[in-house]
Image 1 (spheres, one colour):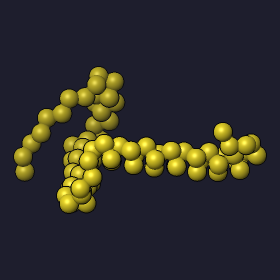
Image 2 (cartoon, rainbow, N blue to C red):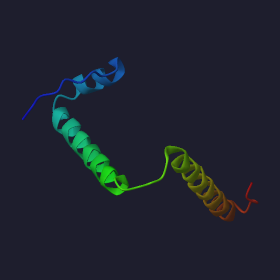
Image 3 (cartoon, rainbow, N blue to C red):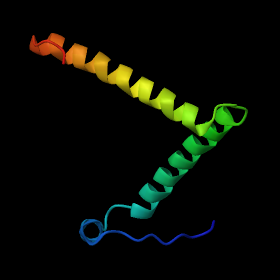
Length: 84
């Protein structure tokens, strides 16, 4: 299996060094593996898409806006306030 070297911010490195009982390389390997699987799935899902990047960004904004309205409405119902 190939090896990889990672750079960490100093504050994270200090935490890692104080917990030598944790197999950090295993945690990093799993995180990279999970992310790589998601990227592979996304590539497969979009391989035959004819949407342009601009069209995707428009859809992205519509979805985010809809989600924001949905959760603001739910939050308003819980707090008894009107949605913004």
